Image (tube, rainbow over all chains, first blue to last red; front, side, top):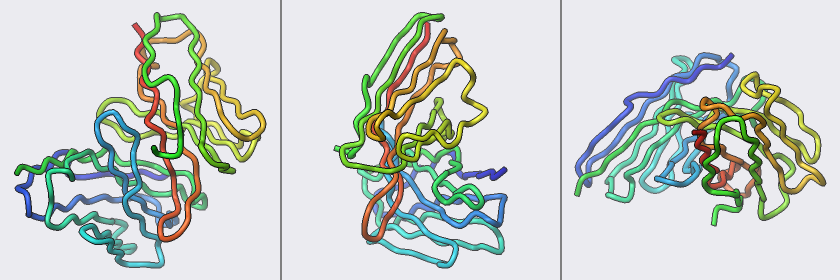
Amino acid sequence: GENVEQHPSTLSVQEGDSAVIKCTYSDSASNYFPWYKQELGKGPQLIIDIRSNVGEKKDQRIAVTLNKTAKHFSLHITETQPEDSAVYFCAASEPYNTDKLIFGTGTRLQVFP
Amino acid sequence: DTGVSQNPRHKITKRGQNVTFRCDPISEHNRLYWYRQTLGQGPEFLTYFQNEAQLEKSRLLSDRFSAERPKGSFSTLEIQRTEQGDSAMYLCAALGGAGAIYGYTFGSGTRLTVV
């Protein structure tokens, strides 16, 4: 089945710097790749997603890129702010089942003022 | 307000006891999912419903677990004869949305501790 690996597990940046989180997936048939932000005591919140027919997607300070050939996708956060501090999860859809997700192990992002 | 309400938020139970969690999507969603999240890990799929029908169950869902979604609205997840390994966050998600982002809306979860 699909397997998703996520790196790094922790990431510390200074406020205003950029942060990049990378994920790889194993099955080329996966076609939907969302990113979730989870704050302490809360459920994951969808922040951005990308489908396999698109290479890049932006939403204000966040962007996601997808390289289907290499089977990896990345989350980019620019001009980080302390409120960006959270755990971020990437996910890939199960092959041929866009609605069922396989999650990475998460990246704890800390943004220092 | 995430659009999905889960109760209780926390549950501490003794090993061997039965527990039941509830998930209430605020608006109508055809598909409802249950995931389990252990410390330091991402959510793992347990089961999902299309309206009232339970369409898939993960191998993680042993015979001690049962889920229902009567009338296609709220859902319950019951664990019988709890074990310490059942300690985790149980997350419910409804699928839907509009506009640029279509995907899961997760509830805040029920954190289960088995002592």
